[in-house]
Length: 453
Image 1 (cartoon, rainbow, N blue to C red):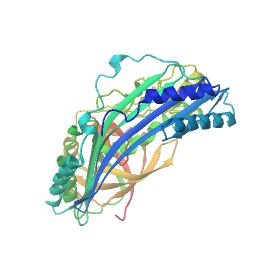
Image 2 (image 1 turned 180 degrees about the vertical axis):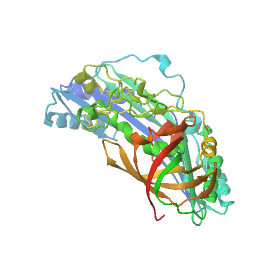
Image 3 (image 1 turned 90 degrees about the horizontal axis):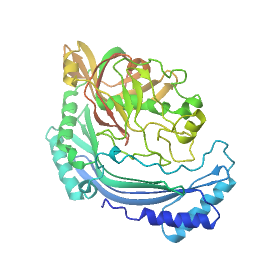
Image 4 (image 1 turned 45 degrees about the vertical axis):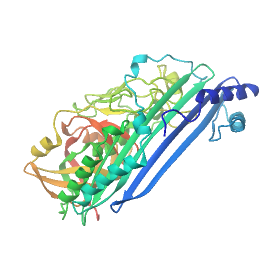
């Protein structure tokens, strides 16, 4: 693997522009992207898969008389570029005009100080199967020595993303990423841990394995607790799993369409005073490009300020309709969603999880959540289940593992009932969605039934 893109995006863009102009089209955008990814997968205490994949692609979007459409290809030779430009133009001319469609954006100079550090590390991009196998073997050993069975993945790789348009936009992003996830399984319990980082040297697979094994051991012979409202301590991943469901609503397009829980709530205090949330692509624990799907530089947003709804994201079209400046959070056009904040940072506090446990007379400690579904979009009520480490807290200490629960919980209520926050960390969920989040101690969390597994 290599940090350097396997193709020259500027050369591809030059061919796209020439092809478009040969068809009489002056306004055109191109996105050139790709990735080198490698994955080591393990189960039953042994590695059973090691794969690597290289992808490159080109996406072309013309703007013709108020119409736009997009065509994509992974054929990046001259014939492939010719065909995709021709297809994009043909589709665009068949598309109905959009009266709100804007011309392509002009180039905007980015502040060179806005990206204070690299997010692309050669060591991560070039990590070998042998390196991953050694780390995985050590992690498996930690789980196996506890009499448990390990399963999980260790992935490393790098990606690039370049956006050009005929008005001078030339926006580039390169990034490496490593992810390690492990589940430790015992006879009647399980434990889990996951982390991600742009630099794989920031990961500690052995520590993650030890955490998963400890959770599996401490939750063995789980007790059954009746459903009800409990004080709950949500570890950062559980906070991500649930709170992460709401940020698509911080969108001017969603609000205009009437599909956001923030309708009629902008400027109101709806969460507790200890809840402040930003969207900040340049936070040291965040990742991703410093520009959006049209090449507009991302701005730092304060979504929640001491519980009060403040900023929302605007793509160019939504901003023009509202008479404000775009915030750099738009998705590539055409799309039906408009925009959303993608680099969530929930401000933390100074209480550790151990301190939260010590201050709890009776409650439940939750590692993570899954099968989350929305029940009430406006009140932001969700249902889902706990998994891989659910514990009873009594008298300020963890005393037993618990059978997993189903919950039915309003996010508005939950984030109004937060009693303590840990320092924020980079948290990783089941998929690739990551955000910066603290652990939270929350009162009156609503568990509705005990699950069968």
